[in-house]
Image (cartoon, rainbow, N blue to C red):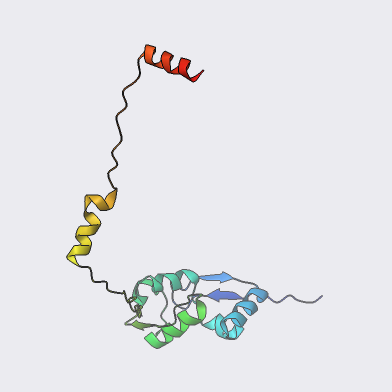
Length: 150
């Protein structure tokens, strides 16, 4: 009988939490991240810890292991264990920072006082239309009109 390979165990280098995984999962994750399976086994950071770091929690709040992790190492760990598309980020004293995108430039419009007055004048809203007032005809007038038409 052939002995099976035991399931690899991923242990988070920050929180210490571990979980079993499959060889296929480990290989596909390592390939997607551009690292080796061995690197991933020794440098795994859980999805939860990555998301908490990106949300602003400090390394000190999350770390339950005795590993000494520099800000540069932490950046590499988060980059290679996370699906985040943010590429311009760094850590300062274990706290996540990212470059804020430049605000979109808005086109400035100059508006004169005349333009404001014209736009708010009652004529600009709707022109007034005079509707003639028609008094209802009496019964005798309506009957006479009908007889003339025939």
